[in-house]
Image (cartoon, rainbow, N blue to C red; front, side, top):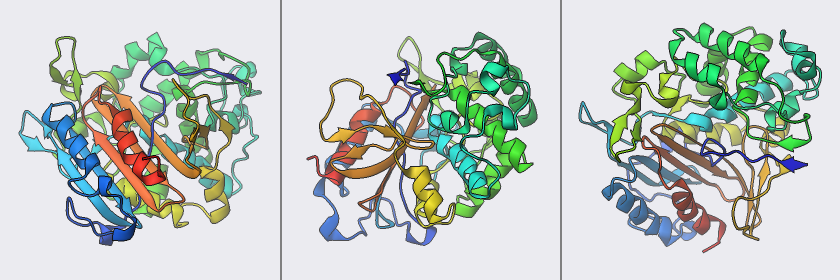
Length: 394
């Protein structure tokens, strides 16, 4: 299979953690099993110092959270959620997730499949009308979930870029997205390549709506966020983003090196009225931890479908120099690498003023969350300092 790699930060990074509300403890506390907590991950340890230094250099703004066995090991917030109003980031500040919300879309599909309403071999045309036969009759739900459909990316589509900021309702966003996606030809035959595709996940969002009989947004609110106890998570609209003091504003680095409020100036994903199946739901670090706990605790899928959701489906080529201790795979909705013989389930995202990553360490009872309202953050370096002590690579 040819590996069609994405060409920008939009691709794939990582995912998150595990904590019920009653177990979330004060910022910077270390409440987990002390025999299992590496010194580097404790408050004041190498990870904490590294992120604090980035923040001191104005290279990071946001929050980080590490949890072990459902208890907070480290929780820190840095920088400002809204510089104009002098609102600081806090542990429960709400951040736009960019592509790190794609697993919610995939999970919705898995829930409907568990109910017998969707088959993974169903073609796109089984559920949605209006696509050319070359797409409707060949692209399957499995292809869409694994980025092997051959579909492209709206972020490279000039019609989308010209119109996205003009839509003024959730219904209009979903309807107009599908109209544009229908016109895009496949870049390769379904199943013969692997290219990260926002189009594919926007299409999955439309399938969720058609099959469930609810809007995509209402379905995720009811069957994902509410069931997982994610009380601050939602697909917030652009007007809410502008007025809700709980939501961090995204600050993008312009050509002069100055940080500009992307939502007030209408740049990137913040131009859109609302996010989509492809990304930009909003959440907090504690809510993402609750999601992970609900997922692994069987509250969102039964055990068989939880494993189906999170297990590796196909290998991916590593970017840059290969690390023999890490093998890259993709699951349904998220990367599922094996790191030093441990299974991870992880996703991240990036947009103007957005850098996010969350990881579930499935065999080790750890979770990590990184949410930033800056772009051009060195997420890879932060993730390495989180991951390596957990999986035993340092």
